[in-house]
Image 1: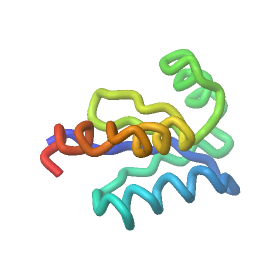
Image 2: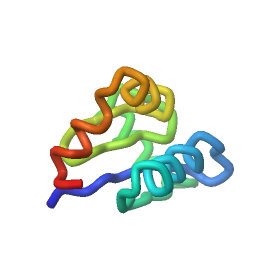
Image 3: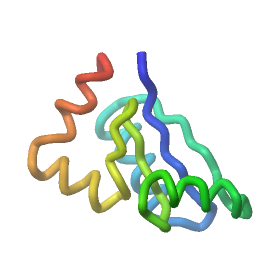
Image 4: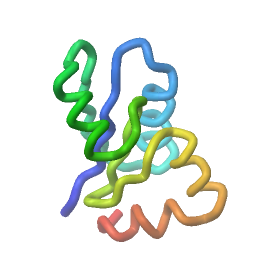
Amino acid sequence: MSTIVVYKAQRCGYCVAAVRFLREVKNVDVEEIDLTGEWDARKELSQRTGQRTVPQIFIGAHHVGGYDDMMALERAGQLDPILDGLGK
């Protein structure tokens, strides 16, 4: 089974909100990777995603984007099918 990974930083309210939403509302396990002070890792993530901010959310191999992107998928009814693809 693939995993849900949230790349985050300390003191990031959107990071906390994303993890809380996934765990408490969607009832899924989340792996958190803290990039606080990890500038090389953040640069690599930025090159991989095209995004410079955190959180960056991956559901399996699917790059969701940030918190706002995830919530837009939720409002459009598209988040659950992605999660269901993991065997949620």
